[in-house]
Length: 182
Image 1: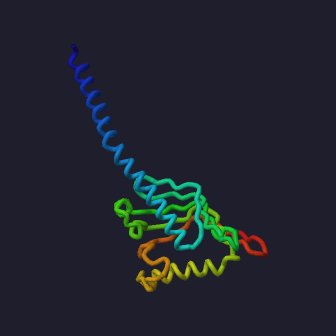
Image 2: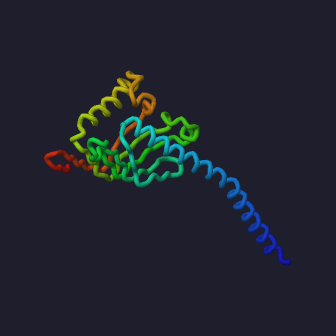
Image 3: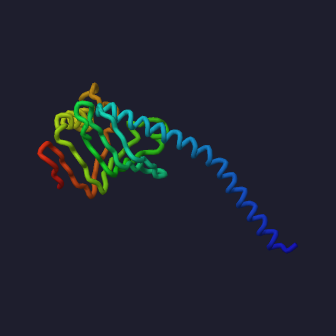
């Protein structure tokens, strides 16, 4: 047999064995990541619903490998007395620290919330609720990132260093008088 053919056969076999070994190792790792991602997703929605006191829905949440979740069509719904949706965000990216997320330290895992290429729709008829939620969130963080209200609904849910930013955002305000887009 010719030596280059034997060498090529050995190299191809080595590559196939390495790929098979990688698949065997990465399969369970991927399955564990998927399981923890599903748990983190359910936990995040539960915490957000608890914080807002409203039902929250979304069309999809898809993870990037190691940096952010992309959330599409996030909606905070009204309650039984006022069924109008309180807030709708078309596209949201939530940047996270993978190690802290995998450890289940959710309050420390998230570093930035970025609203992108979207129309934010607010229903001003629920203005008192929006004011209450924003006051609760900002008071829980306090001056200099300290927790001024440990009994706040938001206490312990948000990291002190969370950054909220936006890009290419339009506002749509709805009220009993009609709709205004800016």
